[in-house]
Image 1 (tube, rainbow, N blue to C red):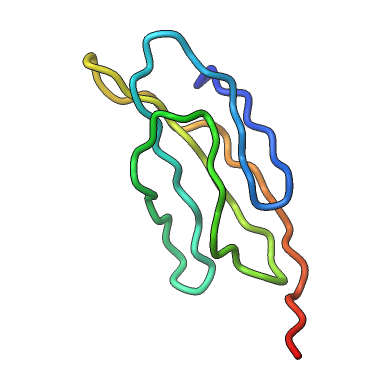
Image 2 (cartoon, one colour; image 1 turned 45 degrees about the vertical axis):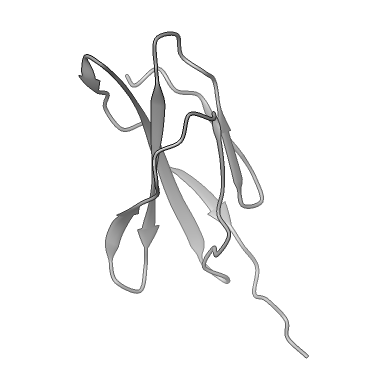
Length: 87
């Protein structure tokens, strides 16, 4: 168990801060390339995806790190972003 409780709201992820964690990494699955993509490290316990994939389920996971090393990835969460309408 990673110890993370990840919640989602549209394209924003939030998770509980964990004591002694100095930074977090968020990874998003890219369905077009069929790979997990890593976002820059952050010391915040939230992440907003500025370019989610519309019309599909977006998958995200998070892990923490500190001077002792890197933790395990949390179970992925899904966020569905509806199709974007353009004029």
